[in-house]
Amino acid sequence: MELEIVCTSLESIAIAEENGATRIELCVNLSCGGLTPTGGFLSEAKKITSLPLYPLIRFREGSFAYSDLEKNVMLDDMRRLIDLGADGLVVGALTSAGNVDFDFVEQALDIAGNLPLTFHRAFDECMHPEASLRTLKSMGTTRVLTAGCAPTATDGLKNLQSFLNLDDVPTILPGGGIRASVVQALLNIGATELHCAPHTSLTTLPNQRLFDGAYGRIDGDEVKAIRKIIDDFMALS
Image 1 (tube, rainbow, N blue to C red):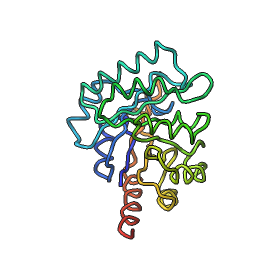
Image 2: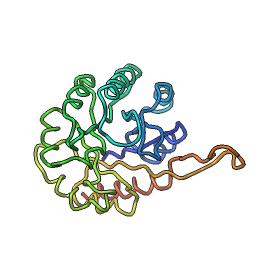
Image 3: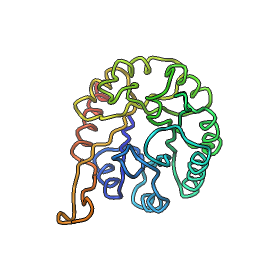
């Protein structure tokens, strides 16, 4: 069973792999939900892990409705990160009316080619989620990251169950505040993949005066606990 861990540093990738991750979503600036990682980050990450690396493609913080120029930046970032060895991509965009931007998805799928494409949690803000899931599937989208159109997967558990029971939709990837305490409930409703970002805050220079010296690093103990619940569940299945 896939356990995707969100990593914003090389150190976090090593911790995630050591404690049971099977896939990495690569991004920066997790405090705003994540932004596109640099090419240098992906290149160095490829050197330290054999796990699949899926860069997040998100140009800026804020709304998921983008101008044509912003979408061009994201499409160009996709091409560059694919050239550097991305194993999959995580994208998403909405129209100004709040619908999934299917035109952008079509362009992203064309660039991705045979690489898996995840539509990210912009989905949780979209209108008509069930119809959107079916359209995304028909277009060739591999999976959809969602908290069930709620702030967290715990809040959206009922909707997640509904999505997981639908036919002809992409793989449903529950995500959003997932910690060990909710994993069993997600497995019980049929989740086959999980997306988690259990970070802890650290600082290497506590007396830094002008800027916040704290940064996030993956909590290995939490990843290990999640992995154990998954493995125990699989052993009984």
